[in-house]
Length: 428
Ligand code: NAD
Image 1 (cartoon, rainbow, N blue to C red):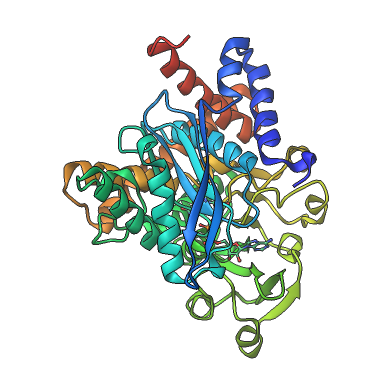
Image 2 (cartoon, rainbow, N blue to C red):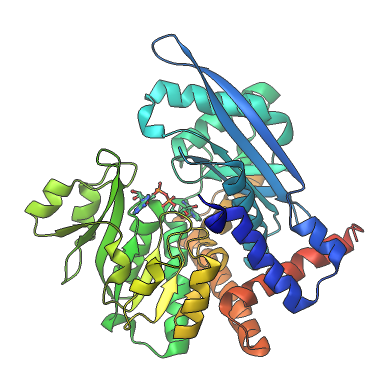
């Protein structure tokens, strides 16, 4: 990633903009522009052939004034200290906007998980926890799954932590498998949360959701459940999704003008969110190389893959019909693209509001772990809808009251809460 699109530079730029708007004190800025703590880990792991491979890992705790740091662990070959710093900072704002009593953290390991066997993955997960266990915990920092990691991996990490500490501690990590301390509804939570915010936006814009179409970037956890919500809850059509093909090392856009058959597409998609193109073509889908999802004539665009995807170049391709950009991914839009979206009047639902459903349900999971009493899926999803709807209203109201862009309004709501917590704790 160039300096131009460096995720951490971007996160700081977004923060600085709002800090200026809020006239934030210089000392407060000095605290919030950087993580409070970060750990760089070297992780030796035995491979199946007996050799030792050393992986680079990170854990960053951006701010924990409002509660224990919270944020996923990504397994990604392009992971860097700066992407983890940016994501940790966004988690601080996300937890504040969602109004859950947690701070912001993030972790990552530089690895393509698809190149590891199941046993190697397990050893890498356990090595990560052995290296960082003193600095995480239900009252310190609570990791979760993210790109390239899944519930099973969280289960191994929880087991390693519990083994080291000698106490069953399900609350050390969230996104665990159901039956192994996980919460019902966690799998669906981020994608459904995206759709709750799209639903609220359509109410304000007086759009009939049943007459709308969407194109989605990505076809992993967030994208699949956002697609399900868009189709089943809103009654709209998803006409395109996209994915990264690991064999071809290229991205593809998979489309069907009369709407995708979600169950079918999921059935030909692997655990990493890669679609089998041949089977898709046989079933009448069109496949285009590249990021054509962004150019489609749809009402709603949902980037749900990686950061920096809606940038100065790709934003020019957005069709005039598009009314809403719902940021399922973290940091999908660069500041340069933001200016274009603003000028064109496209309604942006900013990432740390739009995709807060995952962390909100992670928080519910921690609460259930603490109580040792588990809710039904309906209970979880109802509580999630309430939280997301309230969070959306607080940001929307702020954007109207201050006459600012939704992203700036989300930052204002979040920064205000974090600064208040720091004041109350006597940090300022
Ligand atoms: P995932 O690994 O399940 O899926 C990622 C998807 O993106 C895959 O389909 C992959 O093929 C696709 N992809 C990757 N690079 C691409 C490219 N260049 N072009 C097109 N498609 C590409 O990941 P996920 O959990 O769905 O997360 C997606 C995004 O949402 C990330 O930004 C993540 O940080 C964010 N997020 C995830 C959660 C969560 O609960 N999983 C919560 C909040 C935010």
